[in-house]
Image 1 (cartoon, rainbow, N blue to C red):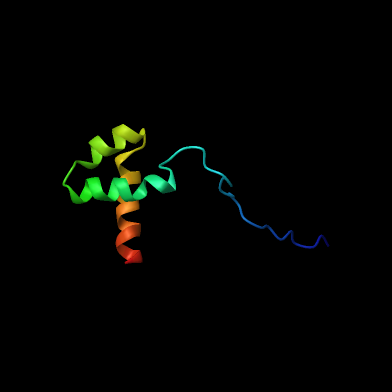
Image 2 (cartoon, rainbow, N blue to C red):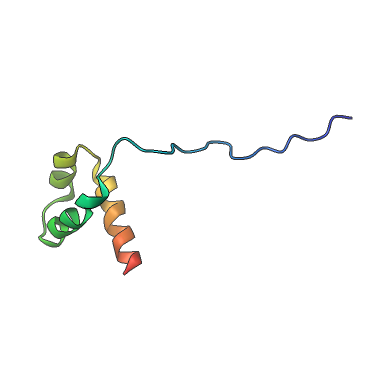
Length: 64
């Protein structure tokens, strides 16, 4: 009888993500969102999806 194999994480995520918005730019992005700029325009400036902007905004609202 073969003992069952204990799997760790099936799909481990990347350690260092080379894309996205640098952490030091987050306050700038949040200020632009507060200034009613569109997520699409901000996302285009940072070469990310608008979903990335939305997630950053959601995370900042949960943190405060």
